[in-house]
Image (cartoon, rainbow, N blue to C red; front, side, top):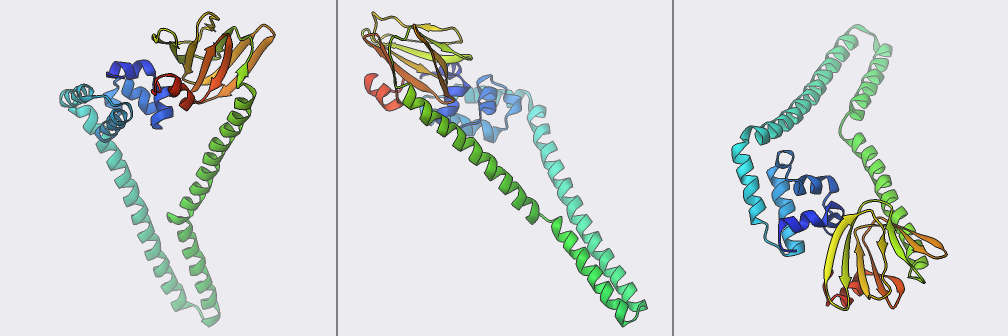
Length: 268
């Protein structure tokens, strides 16, 4: 990796797996959609990419600064709209709460002054019930509900893929007589000839034909693949990047460390 164009070729899916930056934000960044990113987001993402891939992205920083200077209304208007919406929403909640409390106090005082001792107890109960309703509308209850929902979603998203990955890895460690690797969807592929050391890469959904006369390393941006053999196909279902070695006519799935060891200590 030497330039921003290399990152564009690598693609958002592969970069997401290494940096954990959201795919949507990466696509905006790689497509240079400067108007859809705040300055804080853009500079933060660029710093992460420079650290992870060891490249200088000062050129793309300059392009962003030039865009901001030539389109000041685009960036400023978006930030001001967000701030105003939050401010007005907050003011409405605060004002509404104050008015509700004042009304409750006034109503309680008027009713207690006109009723006897017995009805006064009912007035007190009414006031307490009203205060409980106000408490439900505060920030505490929604935070608990949202936290529970988010925790369930995160747990489901983390657990299910890991279980699927463990099962798949055991079943496809070595595949005899494999003839091709067919992606189920578009994917970035890195290919390294172990004999000559020549590297090549492309983004495609076409099958990769395996050549028995060559010893080759393969890296796929995702593991949604079909391994084609004379006896049928073997399915891999992995959302993360996967690596293979094809040596002496035998296809074997390996991990990132094993791939790097065969690639002179580098991931790609």
